[in-house]
Image (tube, rainbow, N blue to C red; front, side, top):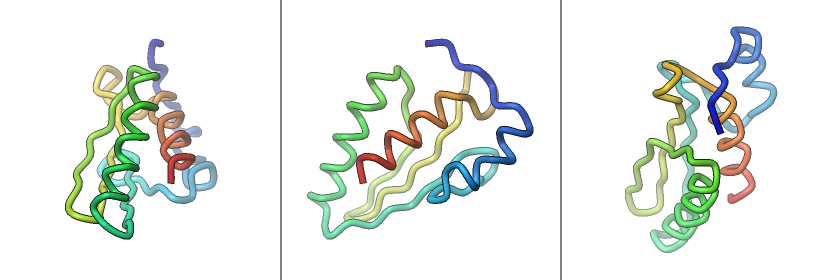
Length: 94
């Protein structure tokens, strides 16, 4: 699926559309904490399957029970509809 860049008005609506996410350095950003490493890793495995199905992958980091996620679309040079869809699928995995 080809990524469609978000318009300025779509970007402005993101805080209302994705309340768990913030905009940081032009990327969608979310930090999550889990009970332990196994729970965090299980979450990451579920997200990996969702990301692979979209052909769109997060920038992320895991340290013990914490997962930090940044979403952007390098092909478009910013945020795209794929970032929004992946953020929604990530929210569904929590």
